[in-house]
Image (cartoon, rainbow, N blue to C red; front, side, top):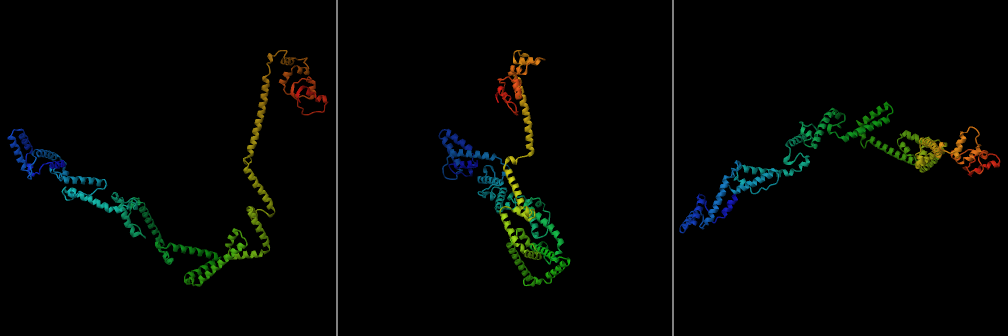
Length: 550
């Protein structure tokens, strides 16, 4: 609306002074309109009067456009009345004065409000156009707010280089969002930690650090410092070692490598004494000599001292001895275990071993022959047999038998493994299969017998329905007679079909065939002779007369 008033003022034909505010514009418009509607010369006099009245407020010599300017001023005063009736609250009293408010101040305030919202939302804003606010034209409160906002910007600029502290402090520092309590606790912990970097205990509890509110690193550092303090208290009991160890022990400042070397030297010295001294008296004598050497006679241990030179010569002799032993083991083709054992021999044992080798000179040829054969056997893959012979597990006369037995065992295992039937053979299962087969075979034989009997009986007629003249009727009639039966030969000739159905197989001797079967009758399909007897040819040829095939 203020911009609208400014635009309306630009539409005025001339520039007016403050006198225009004292004029009744609406009344002048009414007089102007009344003059225009009246007749001449009254109309001319009326318009001149209105023009003269309006000219009193004109700041220049130009002729105003009275009708247009009056209407514009009416619009301006209407807008002013609306602005005067607006109430924006007590917080705007310093910048709002209705129509008399300064537009530039209002724009500066609006821009400051937008910048305030950006600051609240932690968004960037531009510090341009706030000169009126900074000079106090918009009130002291807004001026103070602007100063505060600019202070925040400066503070952000100062904190910008510390953004990397977020990762370095494990999130303890997060700019303006930093939690002050853990931060102050971390600062207090670091302040207490500096004086006790080397030794000593922390002052205070540092509970936020202990529970991890200041990061895992500080939490672990606190735990280490507390543990170190406990160790320091425990080490106080060993303060007397400083005098005993000639200053080697100095508490936490003790050199670990020096102590390690001293302990290792003491262990080697004790081991050497145990090997040198075979009796308590010798051990005591050696210990006394060593104490003197390490004490008052310590100068002998210098590089130029006789003890050091003698030790160097002894080491050279031992090195030369080791080389000679290696040559002996190589020339004698010792086994790996033999080479390892000979290196562990004492001087006396090594001397005895060499003397025994010299005494065994007559058997060297046999030994060399054995070593040659041994290498050939090992190359042929008989290392196990060689080891058994060397371990006296196989005697000399049993070598061939042992080899053949184990070779046969190996061959049998190889064959069994490659043959699925033999590999999967189980005697119990096999015997069970045999028993199952026998039971099934017996059952099949019985079922076959019953099936044949049922099949043959299926073709037999009903005894009650046969006729007297049929074969079955003749057989029934003869079976019912008590005396005067037909001869068996004659009966068998009358019932040839019934006979084969009732007895498809008959066990008869050649003599029985000749007596009971009619010559030329082909009652049977085949004849089998199991035990030919010494009988007349006629009897032996009898079965041919009654069969189709012999």
